[in-house]
Image 1 (tube, one colour):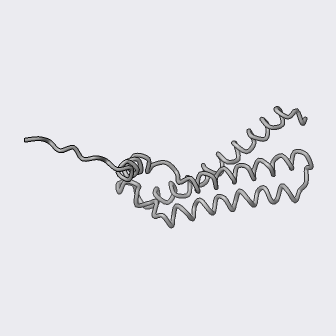
Image 2 (image 1 turned 120 degrees about the horizontal axis):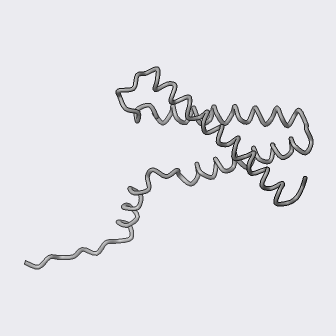
Image 3 (image 1 turned 60 degrees about the horizontal axis):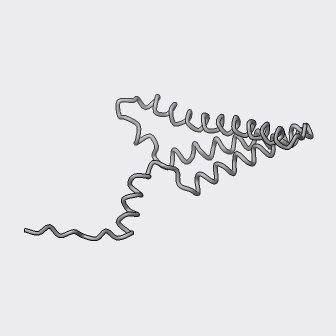
Amino acid sequence: MKKIKTKRSSYDWQKEAETYFNFTPHPKQWFEFLGWITAFSTLNFLIQKTGSIYIKILYWVSFLVLYNYIQKKLWTKRFQDYLPHIISGKIRTIITYSIPAIAVAVAYILGGKLVEDVVKGLKLQ
């Protein structure tokens, strides 16, 4: 008996690729996060150049807003459902609140490093 080969359409390949890359962030979310880092970098640069207390307040309030945004996303996406059921409710809550704190810390570090690299590269010191 002759085996019939079926031609795969580009749609099939796209669906297969989607299943392999589901763990990557959605491009919109990725560029939103890059936008946050760029905004923090810009504010950090302005703080270094001007020393303005108003820019410092805006800078730290922005970090609180980012934390709240990420934490809210985790709760609305039911992130805790993806954690193993062995973990107690209290630990799940701690993990859910820790991830936004880590993301904000990463944004803080990346923003600072980005400003340092730009200042060095442009020799603005």
